[in-house]
Length: 290
Image (cartoon, one colour):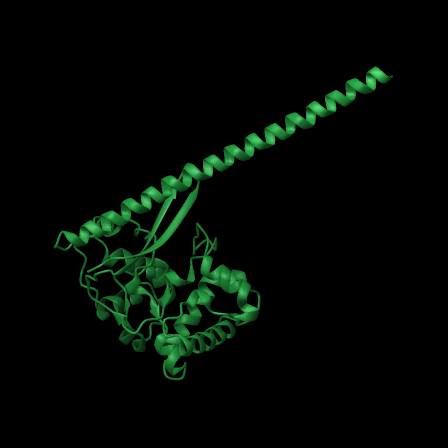
C-alpha cells in the first residue's frame, strides 16, 4: 500500500508539473503571437503615416487609396466602405455647446439621431439619446469654460460613464445594417472653432445613413464616387432622395452641408492598421504639417 501511494503521489506531482509547464508554454506562445501582431500592425501604421507625409511633400494634389478605389468604381458596383469618417465630415458640436439647442435645433436633432442610430443597442432606456445628449452638452460646456482645449475623452458624464466609455471605444468590426458592433463616437463628432459644415463628399456611408436613410445613403455614395461622377449639388441630392422615395429630406439641412468635390488638406488624420493573422488592430491619430 505504501508503494502504491508513493507511485500515485509521484504521478500526481508529475501531472501538476507537466500542467504548469504546458500552461506556461501556452501563455508564452499567446504573448509572442500578440506581440508579433502588434508589431506588424504598428509597422503598417508607420508606413501609412509616412505615405501621408510624403504625399503632402510632393507639392501636388494626391488622392488617398480609398478615394482612387472609389473613383474607379462603376455606377452599378457597391459603394466603397471607408475605414474612417474624414475629419472634415464630422459634426462640429461647438455651436451646439456654446449657444444651446434652441439656437441650433437641426444640429441637435442630427446629433441625437446619430447617437440613436449607432448606439441604441447599448441602452434600453426610452429616448436615451436626448437624455444622454443633454448631459453630454452640459458637461462639455462646463469643461470648455474651465479649459478651452479640454478633449471630449475626459468628460465626466457620471451615470452615463459606462455607456460613454463604450461609445468612445467602439468595436473593431461593425455593420450598421446588420446591427453588429458600433463605431467610435469621436469618428463622427468634434469640437472646433472652424469647420462648421459637414463635407458630404468625404463622409462615411454610415454618416450618410444618419443624414438621410439607408437606401438613399447607398445610392448617394455610389453616385458621387463613380467614374465621371456629377458635381455634388443640392439638386443631385434631391433627385436621389426622390428616386429612393425618401421624403424626409429637410431643405433647412443644406446650410449645414458642404457640397461639391472639395479637396481638403488634412492636418489631422486617424489611421487604422490590422494584422489579419492575429486580429490585432491599432488606431492612431496623427497630425500632418502643411
